[in-house]
Image 1 (cartoon, rainbow, N blue to C red):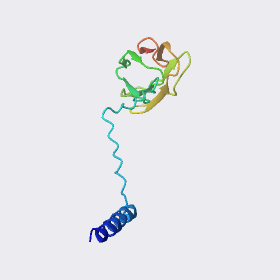
Image 2: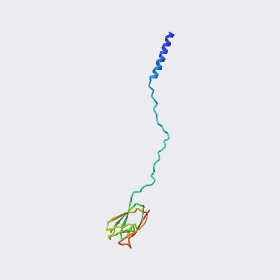
Image 3: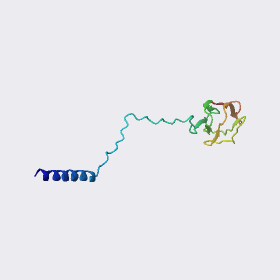
Image 4: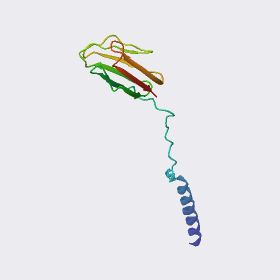
Length: 133
């Protein structure tokens, strides 16, 4: 009987080895756990282009209000005649047609500097200055 047990044990051992080689081994799932992630740098523009803007000058009582105005390059100035008399804006590099009551005229300043102007119809009383920075 001892002889019978040995072949049976040997057969069982071979069967276990054969079956263990046939089982499918599942790989462990890969988990990406980066503890310290480096934040991406924020891109900051080198300069900012300002939005075009418009500032207003009223003509009233044969005077400009405000008489002195400081603006940035690229700003548009809009003159509005609120006076009953006509007025015309005249500078070295710009001039408007005569403006009647409630009429407007625009000029965009694209150079830095100081620009003196007056009313070409009333030059003694209506004077102004635009400073472009």
